[in-house]
Every structure is written in C-alpha cells, then in structure tokens.
Amino acid sequence: MPEMLEVRWHGRGGMGSVTSAELFAAAVIEEGKFAQSFPSFGPERRGAPVTAYLRISDEFIRIRTDITKPDVLVVIDPKLLDQIDVTVGLKENGIILVNSPLSAKELKKKYGFKWKVATVDALKIARETIKLTIANTAMMGALNRVIKAVKMETLEEELKGRFGNRAAGNIEAMTRAYNELDMED
Image (cartoon, rainbow, N blue to C red; front, side, top):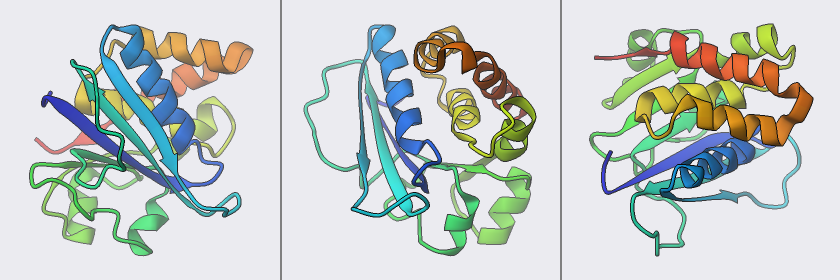
C-alpha cells in the first residue's frame, strides 16, 4: 500500500457510494490506521451522479481536499463510463474497479483503458443476496480484495453495526464479491 491510498467512488444518489466509503473508513480506523471519507454532490436528487472519497494511511491525514489523483476508482454504476470521464486524474499505475458482468479483459478492451482493471458483477450478487439492486456492499468486498486494506471480519463488524438484522445478506454480498472479483494480473 502506498504511503497514503486514495480511492474515488463513482455512483448515483441512492446507490450507497457515500455509505460504502464511510463504512470502509470506519473499518480502517477500527484497525488502528487513519482514514477519511466524504462525499461530493450538489443539490441533485436520487439518481444523480455522486462522488465519494476515501483516504487510507498509516499516519495522520492532514489534507482535506477532494481526491483529484486517485490510486483506485470504484465505479458502482457502469453506465457512468459512457456518460462522464471517471478516469480523470487516475494515477498512471491506478486501478479501475467496475461493477460489471464483463470480465476485466473485456471491459478494458471495450473502453481502451490503459490502467489495471478489475470487475465484479456486484449487481447480480446484490440481487441474489439482499434482493435489491444496491451493489455498494458487494463493491466494498471487491475493493478490499484489490487494496487489501483491512480484515474482512472488520468490514463485517461495520456492516453489522450499520445494518443490524439486515447485515447477513450484505455480508454475504461483500464476501461473494471478494471471491468473485476478476482482476488482470
């Protein structure tokens, strides 16, 4: 992990991008590291594009700005790839994690990405586990597989704290996405 890892989440209002960044940050802090999470959105309503930010470090984080040069992008709504350039500022050795039924190789070819690509069909997993089309907790599991920031058990505890009796399905979604991730070598 670099000195400070910066992750930018792209989704739409109501998809859980902000919640995922918050829960991931809480898990990082629970394990004794430092983290920040914060959203960026205007007065738009549910369904409008939303960006959430996550910083992870072994040291206190002094910077308080939006993440303009992320190490990792998490794209919860793959339709955004056709509507906005989510890759703006992505570091040369960055990773793009996308909720998609396509393989990493197929998605990379389709969009001509020069970065490392990882995919997981988080929407399918969410439908099968929580019976909803909200893929954010699945994407948390996939992200943790990509960046290896915390123990899965710590993320599970955060989900239990946030979702209570609805946590089991979310934990299953997160675990499946972790295991089903397709990432280029």
